[in-house]
Length: 463
Image (cartoon, rainbow, N blue to C red; front, side, top):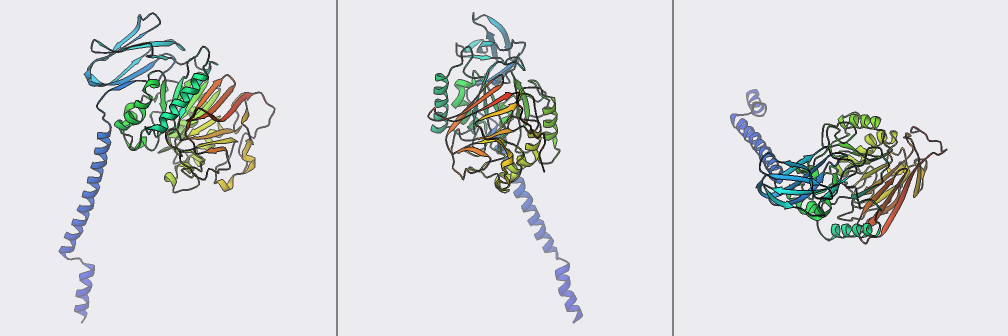
């Protein structure tokens, strides 16, 4: 009897040869599936990098003395750029060393705050020329030159919505010109500039073809969104400073970086992968960058909003991989401790704008009235950088699509599921922000004024 029992036990404890074969087949099948999945994914990423066809000129990394002009041709040619002034005489000429389709030419030793016209050549043939091909270099760093920004929220869908927003903004700009200055200085996206997978073709269809008439005059600065992160094209298409070429501290990566422009210090963060430990590389860089800058105005851009109750819910840990909580819990305290003036995000396809707030890092149910420093819409801040002197938060994600939600976050003074974009005007000690809908109406306007005030600021969070 005992031999029978032992025989049955061996059958369970000591697998037969056929069991090893079965196990091997299972492991091989799993490995094959994983390999095929990775190959397909890598194939999609690799193939998504390419776009065959023309792309109109667009400007990158415009600084006080430099510019990068990019475009794409149907065939491989040697590109050449000529910069000239009002008399059409060439001031700078630079030609590529070899033929290519994707053209990228950097020109240096320019004068600050100066308008240059440009001509493009393919081999020896004139390709683009005209009075509408121009750009202006950045003003001298820390100067009080007036600056106007155009902010687009999650603009990466072509169609009637984004066109109506763009046309409305142009209508507003035509009615509100700036004497002695161009309509705009910079164009900024809050991320997700190409739906659905961030491929080169999607960038062409949903971004470049929509805005090519303004991209040829004004530098475009993108935030790295979750849709952008689905492909590799983002880093191939945009020239973003990694070595402090345009101010700030070198980040060593295009996922996050900073730029000085006149009196502005602009910080672009990566909310996809950054900030997941209390002292990761991005946070280390951010702290150093904030400690180093002496600029008057600090504006930060990130894709995932620390506060929102629109299409996305910053309370929900399952929403967007908990990235919104991550920004709120690890990144926002550092920014508020540095006295940052404004933090702009996207992702949630609505428009939400806060009071001047400070020290709220929990859920909506945890929001305290003491975190609301000023109700606005005109806010006062000290001229110098004072920790925890209040920050205005904005969710701008509705330039191409408006999606409803509860829109009831207690930190927000305005919450609307409405198509639109934003104009920000900065003049010396005043910042004026206007959210303009797709009918050219100013739906929300707020002001931040830097002044010598007698208000007592906490300089740190209580509790």
